[in-house]
Length: 250
Image (cartoon, rainbow, N blue to C red):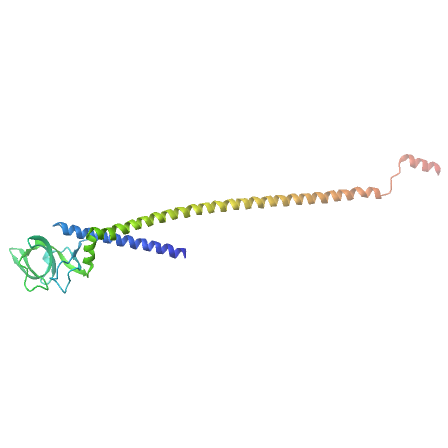
């Protein structure tokens, strides 16, 4: 039972740390991508939140899409790419499908279009504008990422769980310390009891040896007492004077 409980605690700790780290990583990457022209990547991948329905039903507003750095020379018509562009006079990242590729003097130009749009994009892009190629999507996760990007979401989902986990780890460490002290005290008590038991056993052996010695002494004294009664029962020995008198009488 204790082994199962210990394994469960370890599993929960690992999962909690993994969730917190992944959320923090995704939040950081999303914020960095949104606030700067440079695009942050993790192992070549970048998560992006979809802001419009221009690519519906391939992916929808509020989805989280994953793009990957790509060799633009390998792009073909029909690929979905993310690129730098200008929307409403502001810098933005857009993700649309390549409708046409043209090459002039070794320079490739791309015409893109959203799957849900009636006409192609007005801006023609080049290799330098391309950030990456669409890989997959996580439906509706973008809404959650937007929530994490805010101060309230970051506090509730990132900071608070980490604080709770930190408190739990401190509590667990205190419990481990207490249990360790109890175990040491129990071990010392066991050793003390064992030593006392060994001392009592030796004392009992000494007492038994003493009693045995006393018994042997008593037996020896008894034998000596019996040996002292034997001359009294034997015939008296005549002296030389009594023998001479007995001879004269004869």
